[in-house]
Image (cartoon, rainbow, N blue to C red; front, side, top):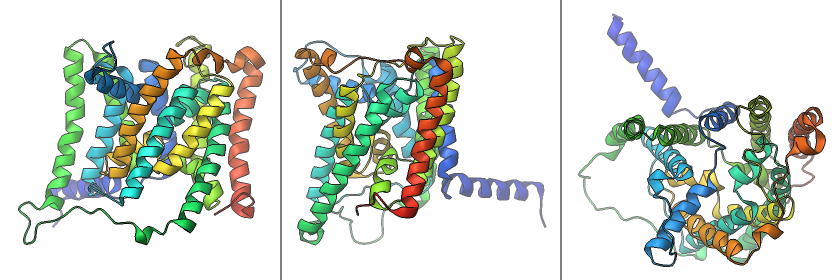
Length: 397
């Protein structure tokens, strides 16, 4: 007999499976990502990742006595809080989906995470942003530097894939000692598979609780950034959304799915950003500071190589770290430390001003032509990827 409460339980079970067990469509995640990025833009300013990583690195070097000027505390820095939200959101939803596990690999793979993270940190210092700030947001904010980094990321991904192919041919993975977590024999004291979903639920519930604490401390903006960051982490983890795939797969397998997703997301993001800027809800030059063209191009190449070695981009490394991937945890730490050092070096030796400056597309082309060009570039990228998928013209794997 079907009762009211049994029907409620059944609907809850189905919803839980849809949200936390079934994968989300990547195209839907791309739409969500654009909407969430626009909400952050209206809430505070342009969404960013690299500034949060640099804040973590700055705090480490300050505690070690290497930096004399004290940076903002990580829980009081806007981009750091957004990053923490992304990490927590991915961690919580991975627990609820039963996908969290400490995953180790060979020492060589961990070394690649270290080197890849370092290259991403240095590349992001040159480009004034990672795959989010320097590419996705830069293009969405109509900053010309985003297109230079887009080209650089493509070149870097091609070089990085060549390195990985050489590695496969010359360094047999079977010869590398593997690192595995050890388990105690016998029956485990705790049945983790049963507890994990509840632990994940507590993690996710802690996010609105933290929002409330920020709000009562008169820091509601920070609370909102934590909340939006968590939603982005949940979205990216459930859909396996990673920018590295958009630049790697056309050369590796020819698959164009992720290019389609990012191109669609960019079109939505750019149209929303244009409305916000054109109506002066945010200044027109907001988010336009990327060093066009040399800094963005060079930074994109370095970053592209790094994300291929690490196995994830800036955001991809964060949400995969939330799943327990040790290699990506190492990449995140390395990214933070080397971005801090790279940024400090560029400032110390006066290199930053020689890399280029921010260029606003409508200042160059006017709003009507800039909007048309914006859409054509995103559409052209997707069409190129679809053509390459069918012809495998640029597939090198």
